[in-house]
View 1 (cartoon, one colour):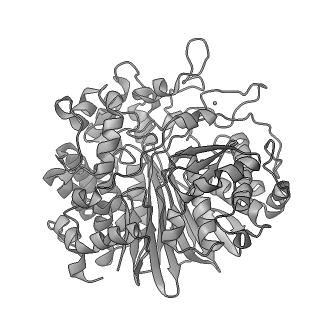
View 2 (cartoon, one colour; view 1 turned 90 degrees about the vertical axis):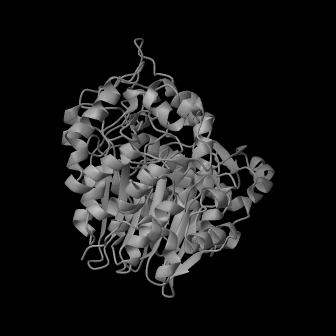
View 3 (spheres, helix red, strand yellow; view 1 turned 180 degrees about the vertical axis):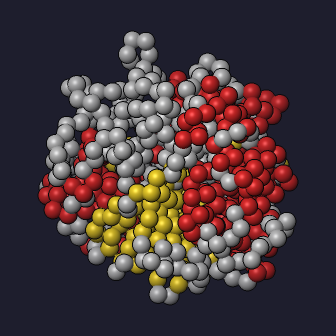
Length: 603
């Protein structure tokens, strides 16, 4: 890519002087709607390279490049990251620029008020590292925090909207930790693109406008939120010029002082005030919770599949474990021979997913609080044995958790926590060969709906189980406890072959993230699809028994056949947001999910 091809990104950065992260009830909650098809108008100020990338995505073609690539959920954010990479910055540097812009232009999905998981491949050492920036429960919270005076679980949105659901944000700390480890560029300058957009204004995208309109009632409950998203009582619309000087001020403080400016002092006081004084549903987050927050480095979790290692984030994320389990159970079956349009392929994938989700509900939670049999859950022998359950001709009549190898014995109850489909994903490869996969979130669309100092606060605590014990009286591993991190399904992944990365991938989508990522990996490795074809492949997902088939796609033609195999089948919107980069001897190839507004851009 030439410097001129990044015209839009460089205009965006013109001030830049470059220096030397109840289950069935989740089905009742509508997923994020697909992006309206008016993006060309909304992104009229994009440079030509980004416009070409949008066209390639819509034509079903991957974007190719030789040296570096970034794929993320909004073209403005991708341009900011591309400008960093073009000037020699690292994947970590580019991620900071991307995340800062995403928090402005896609605030319903991620931002400073949320958390993230990051997977990093270091080209110099050949090592994989994962960073856990998941939100934490307030120290004052108790296991019955989401129960009423009668000990009954709160209705979901009664818990979500307001301060009760807000956990300590982790994203600002993650940005600084990643930069300290792997950054090459001046920290403060990485926020310049987002600051310029926040002060100069950006065009509201069709996706943001549609989400605001859909959620107007909840967004209107709190004055600061209402004033920003519903000025004068009317929802913002696509093409509106939206400015956010408060967000620019917060970014300036972080740029000048580091993430400590977020966790101690005036910004932190504003967060605590918003949470503890949320009308009708105050929370417990304190200044001490913010001051004590730390990112945790954890070992990557890898599972074998087709001579590859599928690597990602371990507990408190269930993503890498559950994706790895699905793929491990399928290893003995010829999906390549069956093909992508064969109901038998999806019978195998669907039931493998059901078995994996049974283990997920029983065993997976924050391993700093409860023992998790990580090695046993992805042990090839265990998965091979579980995979034998798929050998029949029909859907499994029922599934239950297995018995993975343990270093000690403990019996947990089955969880019923809901995880909603918002979030965002960033995939980056830099010119030095480093690879970054990061899934980032404020949980539900618009999180807690609390807006302070230009950003939304998460509702991550509702990813905990509202119940403390199951019906049999066994404690639930993912119950809420002080300081604990709620279980997640985020699955930022790096696929390795002969100790080298060959695919960087991840998706938003709540607990369906797991199925989206597994589908794309299978599409790429088994069915020979390029990255754009793999992310665009129709979604067919089974978590708890119902086979969800993506509405309006060719997959609906399999619905009767799947029903004949014994599945309960439902047609629904399945709005994944997969962003993937394949690394080949010929160069880089990027794909962006056509269901959302993102692109891949490289040079």
